Image 1 (cartoon, rainbow, N blue to C red):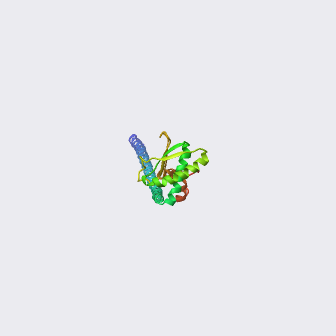
Image 2 (image 1 turned 90 degrees about the vertical axis):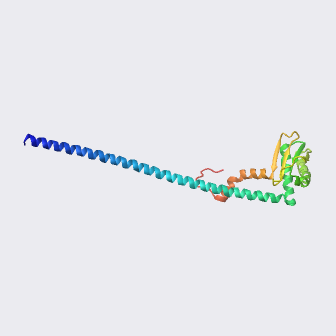
Image 3 (image 1 turned 180 degrees about the horizontal axis):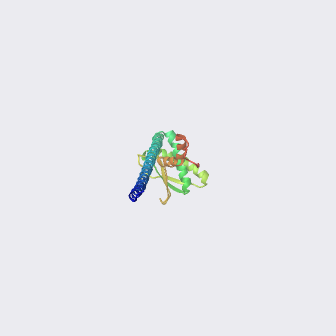
Amino acid sequence: MSARALSDNQADEEYEIEKAAIVRNETKAIDELYKQKTKKADLAQQITKSTIANKTRLKVLSTREKVLDDIFQETEKQLKKISSNKEEYKPVLVGLIEEGVLSLLEKFVTVKVRKQDVEITKEAIKEAQEAFEKKAKFQVDIQIDEEDYLSDDLAGGVILTNSTGKIEINNTLEERLKLLSEESLPAIRLSVFGQSPSRKFFD
């Protein structure tokens, strides 16, 4: 084989080697680009799924909270009906006053009420005093504050203060409903919506 033919063969081999290297590099670059695009697509899909799941969860929670709010609003309406019925309201007042004076355990207590509740409260005070004195074994003087009344917007109930005015017990119907709702909220959720599948621990 002549020197020229040998040189041509060598050149062809080098060309093929270089071409193969270029093809490999390009193929590798294309594969890498495809992997990156696939990862980005997967990530975008995960983000979309997560966003949809979060929005759905927030929507469900919002709906549940609205249902619970409606329950308590309806209960508050019923409270206002109770205070307009003397037979139902008087025992409630007796209980609220008795509970308040038992908490204060003082000989002089002032009771603040709505202006329209003054007369029925006077009757309730007598019964609450008797019940208190049987339990506490000492007398208590309960007076109605007829200078500062509770707002007519309230459903009813009482606010009790000790002789110095430094200790106050809020036994209005709204406050009692608020406390009751906070205490019973888990049970109401369970009753209305059932057990949460994601909850692992229970009270």
